[in-house]
Amino acid sequence: MKFRPCLDLHEGKVKQIVGSTLAGADEATPVTNFISDKSAGYYAGLFKADNLTGGHVIMLGPGNEDALRESLHTYPGAFHAGGGMKPENAGYWLAEGAAKIIVSSYIFSEGKFSADRLAAVSAVTGKDRLVIDLSSMKSDGVCRVMTDKWRRMTDLILSPAVLSKLSAYASEFLIHAVDVEGTGAGIDTALIEAIAGFDECPITYAGGISSVQDIEKLNTIGHGKIDFTVGSALDIYGEPKRSFADMAVLYVTALPIGNPRDITLRALDVLKECDAVICEELRPAETFLKKYDIVKDLYPLNEHNAAQNSAEYIRLIKKSRSRNPAFADPGNELIAQARQQGITVSVLPGASSVAAALSLSGFDISRFFFAGFPPRERAERMQFLRQLSGRPYPIVLMDTSYRLHALLEQITEIFPADALMTLCLDLTKSGERVLSGTAADIISSVDRTAKNKAEFVLIVASYIGAK
Figure (cartoon, rainbow, N blue to C red):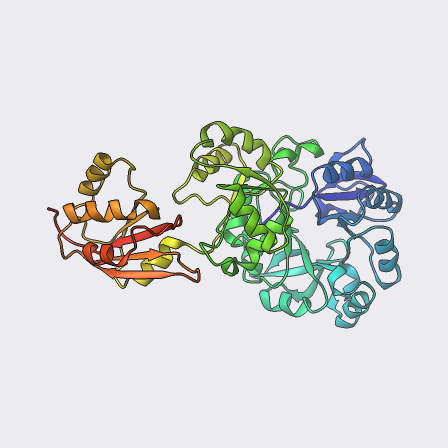
């Protein structure tokens, strides 16, 4: 999920219009939320300064060609151009600097979808440079695509199956929620639910967004897969509801716990597109990113600098996405501050050493207690372990390998001698080891002199009582 910029052009000017009013009897005076005294090139320059790509520039009627050219020339290769696009002019606008062409009404005839017309446009642009606009509204319990300046309801019903079929011709979809577009009345949840099951190519949703709650709701219903654009509610278009500077998304991204091939495709997409990466340790992050030919500015966030750096990184986040996990590290402080300041936070799930170790333990894990990292000092660690006594479900502990023996020896002093446990070392790496037994069994199996700096996961099975 990411923010996509947008520019609507009407009578040669940048405007924010309630789209459905373009279909009124007097098209010269649609309901207009904002008319800018700045050029299309000015806004293109704003988006260029923040490295925002994949946005759309739409010509709402004739007389907007010069403004479209200005935006494309200011920021070439960044915008998707739409408005009256067809096979005869698509190639021209690509040559003028459009990254992709948006086709809408042309692919319908008298309200009926035409596969031949869509194929004709796709033949000119190529699938990779074509976006299909499927602006829709609710009717009789379904979402139907609208055409001809949203005057005419078509025979095309929005669904994952329909999107899958159309994706043979295009690389993206742009979907305006006709019922709420330009109103700031909140997102169209029915429309989003209708498309949420599709994930074969990007979708950008437009319509009704006016608050961070709208964005978070879209993120939840769309499973983090649907991009969004905000128009009338943005401060750069005259409305102070949402700051343009706050439109970035903070991505909390799970990275592999050992084997770099365990990264998800979606996480790689975000890492390739993001402006910066906030990570716990610089060197491992740089090494990992290089494996996928990704070069980004890296910023450290760890237990030593979280307090002083989180506020600074909030400013950075407004132009970036982060991969800092927050299960047992200082990412939680950064995430909390981001939410307090209205920044959208989205998660990209992936590998988890805790989940992997639990699945390997063989214990009943319908419930478990994550105890995290024990204190480093012996006396404090003893007290910590005593407080864990009596729990009727598995206990999960983590630490660095050079403190493993000290922890196991203290466990033998507190836990019953027959308490079973599973130790996971170097999970997903070539030297992965999973040891099960009592603490004494594991102590005898692990080389005390091994110079392993990796973290381990130790799961102690359920038991009652302590020594």
